[in-house]
Image (cartoon, rainbow, N blue to C red; front, side, top):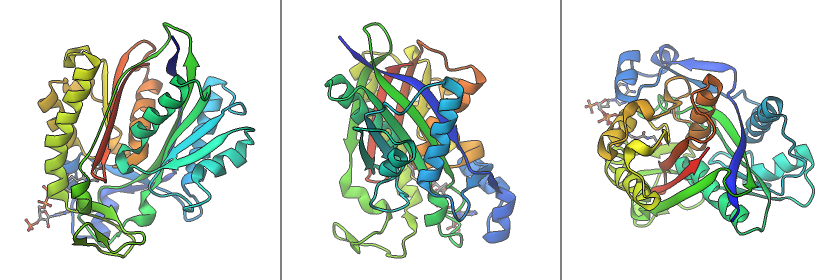
Length: 324
Ligand code: ACO
């Protein structure tokens, strides 16, 4: 039996820091309000000439430097992003061009804040089917470029960053993908969107200004109810009790949501990893950013059971339980 295993991880955030104090000068808000409602202190902002592919390549370079891995023989690249440099070519194609992989597939995947975990699910499928042997999975976002900095209900939330993992086929006994779960509530797509071409979602007319638009209260309600149900369903599929999970890595939407998810699933809060405090909500990048911080701190170690759970625009969710 072969397995899909993560063999290396890297990450990158842009240098520019946008603090809550900086936001106080842009909109009518306060550090206290933001910290109390979201747990965010600051976020990183990409330079004008920095796009998702630049952040992706910087994250892969970090991974190569730290793990000594090679990527020239990668045979598939999946980039999860809602902010590609261009709709096509994909960010994945730009990454392929940079490293010059031969005989390599490349595709972007768009599942908003569930993008990274959805990409892990697809990558595992490619590896477990035997179709591919070495897959690069990246979550990269420049959300600052689609954020309206006059809208205090959204601009306090979002930040930029990227994380990358290498997934490979492993011999029996190494690594393990224990379970996967996905769920979509597409009838609530209008609660969180960025318009591209169509001016409507179902029967709901939507704003066409190109910025992220959300109904924060409704998204919050969905996150603490349906997403909690999804995590419980994933635990059931893996045959695990909440206390058997070494690390719980939910999408870093905000700290209050993470606390509520822990309460409703029985996973201890001190088992939850997040990248929310210093990086804000980085959508598809938030989960690898959180894991990599813990890897660098030495808290995440090989052999541990990790529950990764993305959720967001769609509204959609994707989760996996894997052995690190
Ligand atoms: N600073 C100060 N006051 C604010 C701000 C701000 N930045 N934003 C809103 N307010 C005001 C509102 O105008 C409102 O005032 P009112 O009562 O006079 O009308 C009051 O604060 C409360 O507003 P709510 O929208 O009810 O605030 P809430 O407690 O719901 O917090 C938040 C807002 C943080 C967005 C919350 O709804 C939330 O966490 N939603 C989840 C959405 C989310 O995380 N989205 C990210 C993308 S989706 C994802 O990643 C899953």
